Amino acid sequence: MEHGVPAPRVGFVPFPYNLPMGEPGDREGHRRVALAALALLYDLEEPGEVEL
Image (cartoon, rainbow, N blue to C red; front, side):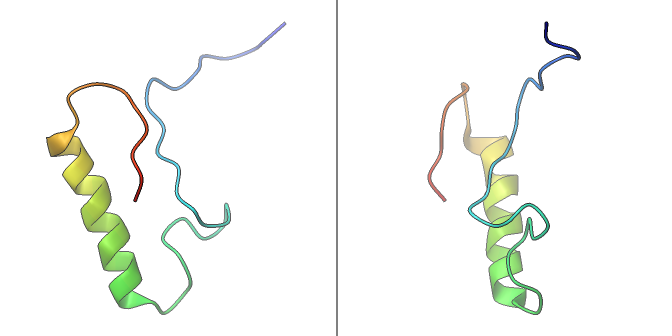
């Protein structure tokens, strides 16, 4: 028996769980991840998988 409610939308990134924006100190990498995530809010019209 499952518990809880599944999330309607989930963003997955290719980083370890404790580094959702990438390696510490990588300012440009953090910026790319944040801008890509924000762009998805504008660009996506339906659920699906997006390669970042």
